[in-house]
Image (tube, rainbow, N blue to C red; front, side, top):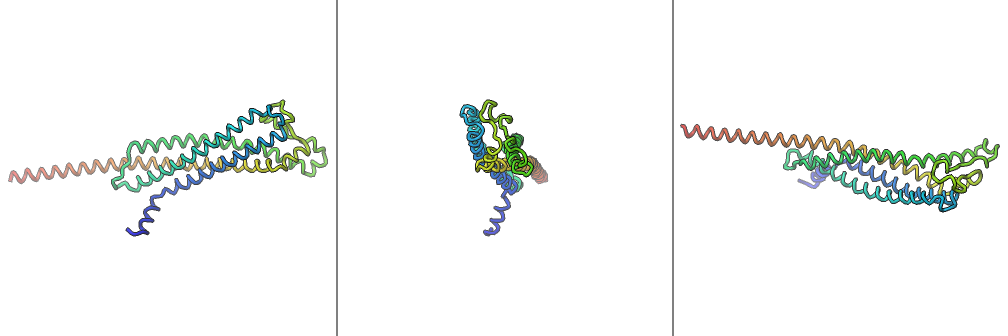
Length: 268
């Protein structure tokens, strides 16, 4: 076999569907974790500088943000390993399907592992749907602040008292009601919208939400691939069982024919 034929054979064994899903999963998780981590830090800076200047008022929020950042580290590490495992499982099942008629045989343990991955991916997909919905909440909050700032710059707002236009973050439950000042009005609100922390955090939350959506799509893609691979492995095991039974019957028939000929020759 030449070099070209070997390359074609190797490329034929690559699980392209699993490879695409793995790349999409890595990209989505990386966007969600990286952008989410930086956006949380920027959000805490905005709250400390403009909405809650007393440290004790937002101490619990600071702990929650730090905990979420540690969770982000865990999510990134887990899905890096899980994506590699699913890609390896894709290589395994591709080899199992393409070598049905060789000495390669699927085992009950391999089929059980494939079924376990189907169940685990299904659970993770549901969990990431919740993460996707949760990641849309800060996008909604920042959009409200951004739209309020745009309303202040509109010609209609200039005809009225700009100081009456306010954003009170206490109503969202982010900080307690006794936090000072708790809200921003007029020029102070405009200054917040013009800060680099607000602009960066707002767009990073959007990217993180998109990354969570990409991860959901990747897990759905993985779920379809794993379900198809599990069905292929099940059919492959049945095919091997059928071939073993057929080979055994042919051997028994051959042995019976040989004994019959021997008996006939001895009788003659």
